[in-house]
Image 1 (cartoon, chains in turn yellow, red):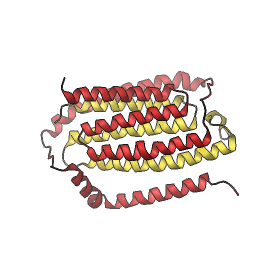
Image 2 (cartoon, rainbow over the protein chains, first blue to last red):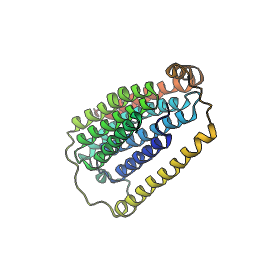
Image 3 (tube, chains in turn orange, purple):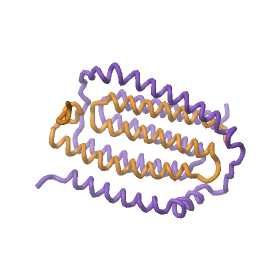
Image 4 (cartoon, rainbow over the protein chains, first blue to last red):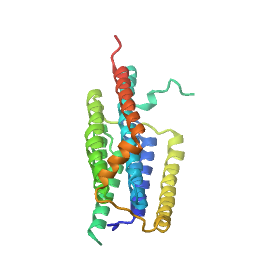
Length: 103
Length: 169
């Protein structure tokens, strides 16, 4: 059953999370930045499921994954609506053009 | 090399390549398709971990609903190729080293956490015949109140998205 060690899944999760952080910092497009957030949430979900298997017992980790997915769906809906509003006002997808509050 | 291990390495490679493509592809629609690749390979990994319900939810909600929302918005806004701008000095000299450092740090600590876990919990695994049934009991008994709260969260997100995206009259 436990053919693949849990640490392999956790290392993959860490790598995906790091790539998500790097994408979040380096991408200039509002929509791609939201996608980077989704990538990070996916990496966290993988860690939850891996720890859940390592723990045995009741599947509390799956419940957390379920709630994370719900929050991700809500975040995507609101975030994309905000992106549409920003683009309607600025005519640009580039985050560097959204600098009204920038010091 | 057993079959699960081969499957793990294949899916892990696809997921990491997909994540790298999200970073390096310049068209948002290509990034979205690469992200769907990551999500599908993660669903296979969930199956490998014995989480069938989560794998199905991953495909239906993430790859099916959320990414379709992203692609619809990309098409609605006619998002073209990302502009190549000079990165700010902050992002170039602090962002990349710190991002790589964070990744290595997470890899280090998570691999050590996993080494400690089997010794701590031992063989107390109470694997039941139908884990999805257990999940249903957890969701609708122990976590009933948070479960109902999520429906309110979704409703508020729906209304918020409608109000934000509405054209000013």
